[in-house]
Amino acid sequence: MDGVWAARWLVKQLHPTRPSVLSAAAGGFMVVATIAQAPKLFGAACDVVGIVNFKTFLERTADYRRALREAEYGPLEDPEFLESISPIRLVRNIETPLLIAHGRNDPRVPFHEAEQLHAELARLGRPAELLVFDDEGHGFRKEANRIEFYEKLAAFFEKHLHVTAVDPADANVKFVDPDDD
Image (cartoon, rainbow, N blue to C red; front, top):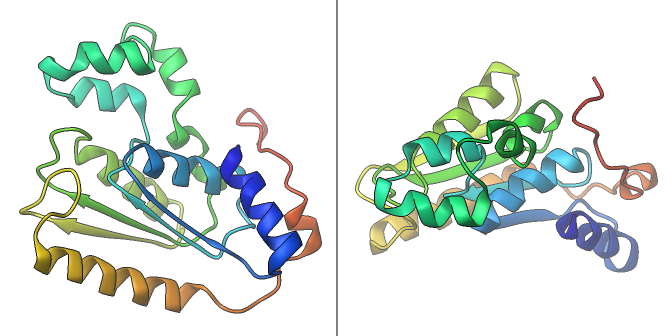
């Protein structure tokens, strides 16, 4: 994964502390996939409006959008494939503290994506916080919500990004095989 390799390079070349990762939408998907593939490499992460389960995403996506999304991600009639590309299947590997932020009225990535990720991480006893904006959709448009998001993000990263060196073994990432337990 590009995110894992970029973080490895950063740690080895520039700074031997645990980096953070933050992104939204398709990038939110990559955040979850990256921290599941490299569970000890990152100090903290934030997923904003990301897809974590392509099957539930397509099931809950509005009809007018589904055909376009199926062309992009795969057909709902092939649940095995959708599961194979969904980071929710690797959630048990996640050790990185994760802030999940989502608008409850998101028309592009249904809020259920954030709910199921948070619920599964909580069930596993993993460090995760869910930040929900009831009056937002795909992203945070209202100034008060953006301010709240960035204040919570800063506090979350400050809490979890301790200045500790990465164990060299963790910088030599081996990708996680979802079939290995």
